[in-house]
Length: 396
Ligand SMILES: Cc1ncc(COP(=O)(O)O)c(C=O)c1O
Image 1: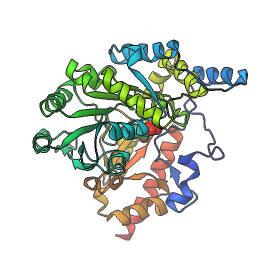
Image 2: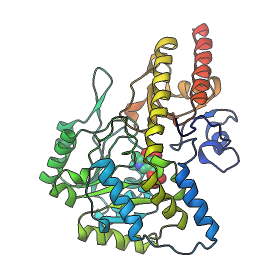
Image 3: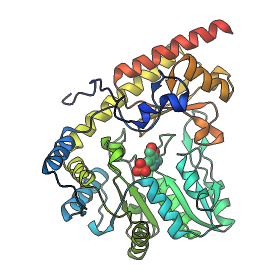
Image 4: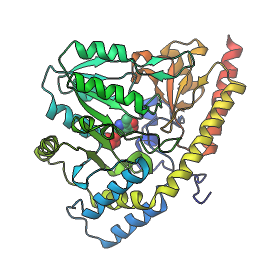
């Protein structure tokens, strides 16, 4: 390996949400932080170098999205996702969640219905409810093997009921880790065309794939899909620069792009930061080799955890995701209520994870574990869990 993902980095004094909020959120000091979706690794060396150079300059005034920046984003989409976009389709936004919120505000009206596919990333609920729009759930189905698939019959039933303006798609899906196939996405696109529904496609996890080349950007499906979609992309998850608040929203339809931009201006949100711009451009131009090694490292963590559970704690089960650095772990074999499980994991195992019900009531008994950590941390998590389960077994 060229890059050192084993390096143990102390994040405790950097005001990190993931590390610093453990006592406030979990009520204990010493839980291992395996929750908030950022990584414990340094960003790629090229990114750190570009930021240092920018810092050396010493002047940090208002910053443009240059042609070179747009070209870096465009090239990345082409190389990594075989997707040809025009540089002018790229709209800056200080985050994907802010973009989802602005899309809801701009393209729907109070009382309109918006579909989400649950269990899903919690802000998908709040951006709808906070704007006074009505949430419609299209729960994912689970196969006998524990794989998640879309429920197209339910989706069509909801769409044909009328009043739905927007579908917020999570592609790849957090927390279930699916990379939707071209066929699945084409069926979604066909239904959205039939019932004239817009699509906000959150593709923030699209680069974190374990089979390269198989993510299909929603807008690349067809001309109609391009016209009705907002593809929300960002270098933040991919290169561990989420704190730089830089996202690129790709909106092929000119009229919709202008309306989105008008809302950005309304809230004075359209300005990129000098460090966000430098980091993003360097990441997209020079970060690919780092990303490929990162994915191999994370996959090893995942495979280790899966086989550890199989061997030592068969009550707890996990299917490996197709994308994301998040494991969606099934703890139902322990037979605990949600409250018991939460208490057990925090107080006995001392691991801080996101509980399944944050993502939807259907995910009770599941926990989301962030494994973008050192292999040593993954081992520590397994030994803590094993010891806690051993103790619990004795008490049964
Ligand atoms: C699906 C999804 N969308 C958006 C975000 C956050 O995006 P941002 O920090 O750009 O608002 C996350 C972070 O975990 C996520 O998982």
